[in-house]
Length: 388
Image (cartoon, rainbow, N blue to C red):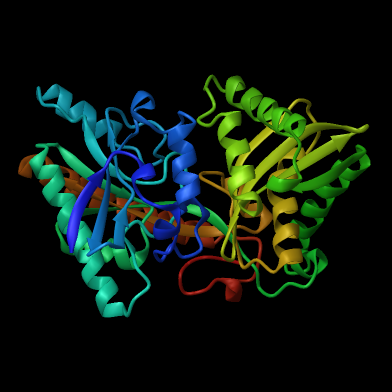
């Protein structure tokens, strides 16, 4: 195996990258990552300098690690600002750092991408990727290397190689072979079911209807409206949108069935929208925007409409994004997420490892507490801690 660092995904053919075991994750596809780079969302000027690691066996691409050099910690959803502050107080440099993640995308999935081979060979490829990541960080004399939103198997491999484990919690939905939305809502406890149905009824009684459009069904004008709605919501919170209209239109062209928009229509015009991504058996909720206030419209557009889509299309999972205990009442259950962090300085590594251990315990207690207040029967909680 030969190791190479590339500064752009243009240096790898899309068919070769996509032939790796991506697990059906749309955010790992060559088209998605290249669109981020070429539309200015994730490149050197935005603080996401691509330094992807690739492994070749002869001329065959057999492994890859999406990797970026970061001079900041924005757009990651795993927060290490206190770590950088501690470095600064000690007179040391925390940035730049190496980061393996999907920019602006808090969705778990493989990061150590291996060719579709027998398990033992895939394990060897992933082990080499970890070794190459550490060697690269040491060669550049960087403070740290981070791998975010890992799979359980990759998390264990990283921990075995000296990475510190962190945990957090999101809220996910699982399809229990529901045939209709009525089947789904029937599993709620009576009081929660009445509340959910009342929320839906308020939206319908307000005269709101919904249109579902995939990437290849959207016009330029509709893309523009979706971005205006989403940007307005970002602006209302004092933030700029991570992604731009060119990026979304590029994905709509190159991965047309990997992106979907739900438009909330009132009197023939869109007043709100939710932007979703699709891959494998999973629907991913990502962005929301609204130009008018309607009772319960956010819950309906972002959650119940997504659940209906999953049931209609036989999707097994729905990940609506980060945060939001309000999701619990809509029958999303707690799901633990993981990340792994290598710290070069031994003293800082010990301190961070101690803090991370306390953090993991707190997350476990929080998930246990949340499971006591889920709106469905206890026997619907599986052994991973994720409800339906």
